[in-house]
Image 1 (cartoon, protein in one colour):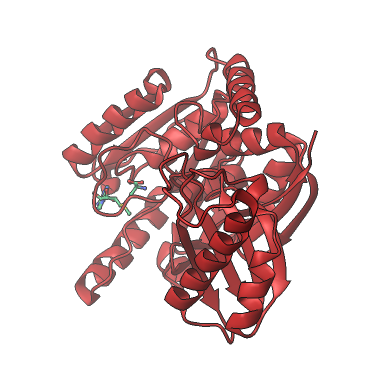
Image 2 (cartoon, rainbow, N blue to C red; image 1 turned 180 degrees about the vertical axis):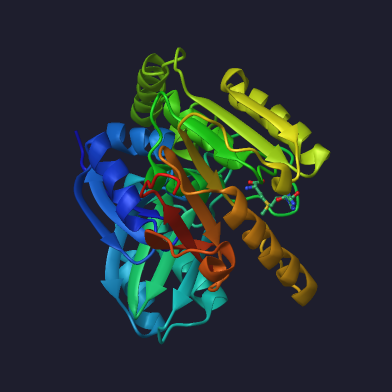
Length: 377
Ligand SMILES: C[S@@+](CC[C@H](N)C(=O)[O-])C[C@H]1O[C@@H](n2cnc3c(N)ncnc32)[C@H](O)[C@@H]1O
């Protein structure tokens, strides 16, 4: 079977987790870079990556990588790539991309040149000058980083964070891929007891439930590569079936959410239902100041409000102090809290046992981890 080179972009800070996910799927030559992970594999790996990866933003099949500092070099190098191996004479191929720290910095110009170069290549191969673009869509993605060009075909379509369970969202939902990265770091087991006292639309609860039940995040959605060829279609069908067979419905795992906003609680319950995990998730309206620590062991993963304006920031800081009082350091209790506030630990009242830098979109955050157990004095 043909082996493809692929790249999966991810949020900064998540590369190591994503690389582990890929290795577990059997991907070859897995290599992390800032904000993306390269790997290789056949169409089964491509399908498995799309269906199973929890922390990748998308999967791109690499058509070529080269250096270019002028439009001529960009054009010439792009025309030399085997686009006809992927794009049929009737297929659509819109081009999008970005450029960072490079001489070729005008994205619209690069977009137009790459499109022109692909048209030139395909015109020669198919002996046509006009492309109707009425067939399957092959979204061409390019990245230009320090004059290094990568051009490829998007195999995912909609971003992989779109699991299909969150039609409705509140003001500040955490991205599914970031919630999954937090859950990986905190480690979810089939018997974990999870709490999120700022559950919002329930993303952390749902992502952790999907992990506990071994439900692949992409099991109920469509990927653009399914239309690329019969071989790809068959690979996706086989990998989807494999993922369904691996689901463990009977787990002890339970997730409990609370939020001061009753509408958020209702949304959590609706989203949990859509994700097929409502049997292990419960939620109720509660101010964190009334949060009661359960007697049993528990894992708390949460994304508290952080505020953007001064008044909101002050309120958020007061909440961090309340959390510090409520979330006692006790045997069997672990806390994983994400916040962009550099002074979080001083408001919370104690330094974290460990920190991990993660990005919530463009916002630099830390995942503050408290897991070293101490008995109450
Ligand atoms: C950043 S959002 C959490 C978003 C959530 N992770 C999601 O994916 O939708 C913070 C949440 O904290 C809730 N909140 C604010 N103050 C609270 C309080 N005192 N007690 C409990 N929840 C509170 C808000 O209603 C909001 O839903």
